[in-house]
Image (cartoon, rainbow, N blue to C red; front, side, top):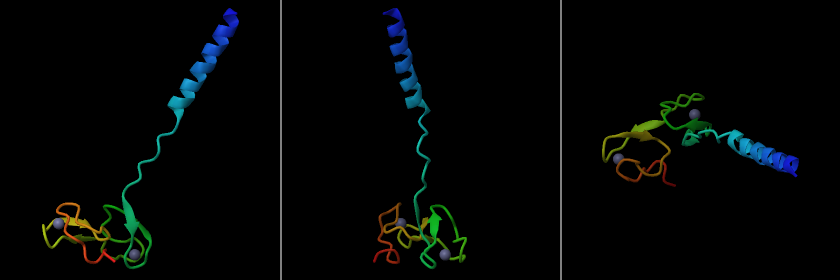
Length: 85
Ligand SMILES: [Zn+2]
Ligand SMILES: [Zn+2]
């Protein structure tokens, strides 16, 4: 009976360890597509590595730099005309 208790305890412990060992989902940066060549690009990139298109632009409303593909300026919600379809 005691052995059964030990076994079940170790099984529970094993599953707790499995739970803890689960890989954390990799941090996926906000990404988009290059407006020129449609290659996937990551947020923060200044130019497209495929075609060297400029990926960031200055918001005409607040003057801050944001990614070119965002629909709205993340700083002031100004509609990004080039991304809005
Ligand atoms: Zn490109
Ligand atoms: Zn803005």
